[in-house]
Image 1: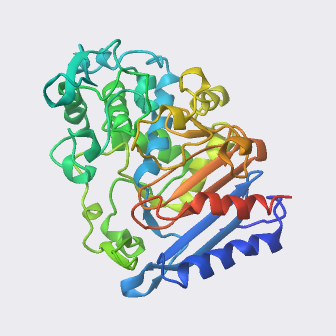
Image 2: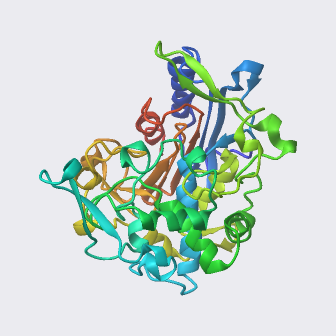
Length: 402
């Protein structure tokens, strides 16, 4: 990895605070096994460092080309795949999903009613869910056991489906709310991946390889880890009741070693930091990288502006007890990414218009167009939100900008 601190406009001495923070606060106390931090600014890699072990049980240190479970950092990749089809005129954001998935016609909504059996009644949807809804988590479908119609642990629940049969199943269930009225983390990006298949006529993994990964040179990102790369695959950890690190997914026996039937557009990818840096750099550069244009500049702007009604705030639109991969306060939501309203609104250093998301194993990334900055952080600790890595890294990284 060619690192050029000067070209990236970063202060080398202040960047040293990142390593001290990661080692003393997380690695040495055993809160995480290992991590990687990468910073790209002005198109140059200004920082790329490894910390700890990618496989604690086998004493394997984090390697430059370690492969990580991206989980929900898959979602922005699905968003980009959708926008490549948008640019070819295949849909508009307010087109109804039922145009491609007939089972979504005549959707119903579950609403509170104290007089009804179970305290709920079923009413017709005011309007059909749209592509904008599924890409912004405002469709009314949900995610996880709090949805009452799904089982937390999507990889197991989805195991018997492919994308299109899964997407059709959602037409059988009532929505959690009227489309466009609330924000709820959801299987929307899995539905979007099914739409990519229907519109393009290609299996989702093949479309990603030809339309996204190939053009960007993302050589290690896929829905599974082949035999020749297993030694690079990181272990995934959780914490027990005593807050001790425990192995939850061994890289040598993981389900990710087998090609799945369903190419989960919401959380199924694995990949390297280097690959995700290329993806984030493309977005930071307005849709192009190294002379290859994946999206138009205005398309990236459309994807990364706030699509919540009335320029709303996630804190106001999110259903009670809902969750996401970022904090809600001071953030709107675009098409598969949260969008900051600025440091005053969020209470965290940064810029208005920066966009971001993360994954279930505590991975995270953000892009700050105003600073021509992209940051990628990888680790493997379930669940996300155990530690506030993003805000801590933002304090350290923005302090190093020249």
